[in-house]
Length: 399
Picture 1 (spheres, rainbow, N blue to C red):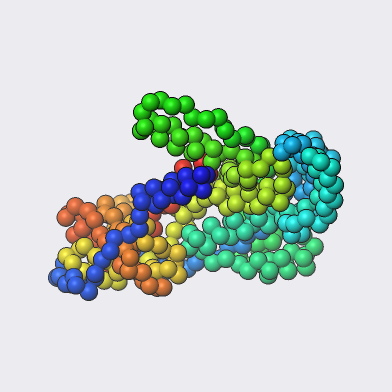
Picture 2 (picture 1 turned 90 degrees about the vertical axis):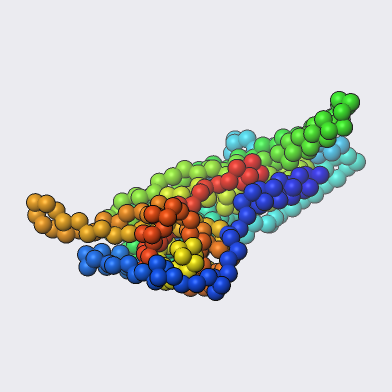
């Protein structure tokens, strides 16, 4: 039933968001207004350089006690209790300070059974810092606008300089970034991993006498039971450092949540896998700030349909997806009234460009919406960039 509810909710969310508009650009004519070219002041031409900054992502420091774990589970008639054999943090059984670098898997398992009693020991060593590193790399690649420095090359540099693989402090990150020749480097910490068991409500739903009310109660109960079992919560601190200046330009604490499984018996491997997924969801909350700073930029190559369709020079290679919104800009040359020095001012045009279903690797068609007086300011050659992206969806925060 849990799977059915989750699929139904996912379908509802997908139905609300949808993709981009379906367009047929070749059926639209190029009007005289469409053919207008933007005039670029000399002082503004530098805005048409679209170099991608090089970014490295270091392994995060594991500041949790969730490292090499030894768990002792005892099950009595289907009920399970978990006794810690090391550190005193409720939830997951761990040995603090152990290296968390190996694969997630049982390296030792002893099972004894007697009637309705089962006891087993296991050791697991999850790669907590690498999980966070991978989640950050994925979000950087998804946003686009940045070039990711190869992870193995970064690890080679750190090894040669006898640095730790996991980096948390900005000073070390700057040194590593300079050796790698990148403009920015991500570092951070995994601060907390907790697991809590919530029992499902197995009580029979009362009969209200109304079929629709009974259905609503049943669905509500089923939805609530999707939030039962082992609930894993994680917290991470994500930092982005500008290598040249050492300035920390992003310093954000993010949280994630994932359901590990419904059984009462604690399974460290499932907890580790759920923590990994929760990190991937938590890092989404960096997207708004990151996409604002490093949004893919380009320009309009062609306009059709009397300012209704625009071909932009950004496609799937730039991370652009159907349904995403773009902003259009125009330039104004400003002359200082006292010094006479000229500068460029970039102003947003109050229109909205929505990426359509027509996307190639290096270009895409977008639908333009806005008032006639604003549409008249959109021209071939106008600078465009993707709108700021949103963080975790409510659906992800819930499940």
